[in-house]
Image 1 (tube, each protein chain N blue to C red):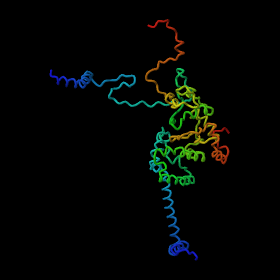
Image 2 (cartoon, one colour):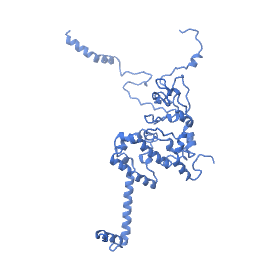
Image 3 (spheres, rainbow over the protein chains, first blue to last red):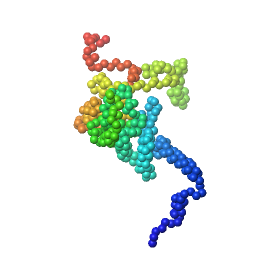
Image 4 (cartoon, rainbow over the protein chains, first blue to last red):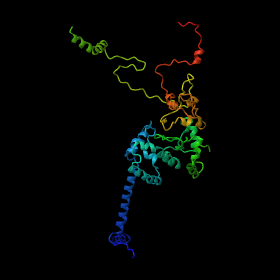
Length: 229
Length: 162
């Protein structure tokens, strides 16, 4: 017996596929445009709404653990009153990367539904894994979110301590390391750091593969803004 | 005097004595203490500004050999927890080469039984129990401490201690 498409599916398909019979081309074009604007506006509004600290701290997992930890750090309270919110560091500003991150974040919805970190103990037990995801992401994109605000070009090393100045010249300006290699745990408590060498140690040399490949794609001469010409 | 009247007077005595004392002084008592500005006890004063940290990265000489060296750099948000000791990411033996920070003394590897361990002894783990950062605050009470060298080189008083 030959399988046939049922009539209730075929009729709407004919309507969609055929040219418009009763509606004018002008109505369809303008109506389609207006509907597109409304759809995109709605999409963008929802996207932005999920990109606020209010949304992030709407769940107790974030509000009672990581947000509380952020509050004491310099990225929340400082002399100038400029502060970083959750998405400033955890969501890329660039649209394509942002959408990619948002799709990844659907895993976090899964985690929320099934209570992956819904108690303090579960959160503490998973802290190393969660931190490693963030370190890997920032390492792979050469600390893109840090560089939304902090740029090596604008960094006046004469205003820094002798220590910071020397290390930035040695590691950051030469492209040997990226921000996250040394500045882990600047906004949250650290997990068990057993086996994680600090960025300035030789032991961290083996772990910078993503940055090396990123630097290879960059035009030469940009890596060290403070190099003498 | 009836016995119950005596008891009542004894019970009222703690209340009467401060009342008598305050009646002698006219106006609220002034506290002329070196630790307080010269204001009345009931006055509220604005707190002095919090002094800035000393972060010039220059080592400060110790006043006596056993003094824990003070920290000449910023330590805001340094995490010394069960998970991580941020001081040791520079000052532990294996990282001093890269960081050029002074290595913690070998005494920090000795536990309370005198056994030298491979890493920092748990009793020495919390760095900032002894090593502290400094601020530019001026001491309220002048410190007259003299180190051993200035004590030795002091001119002799010839045994006259009057």
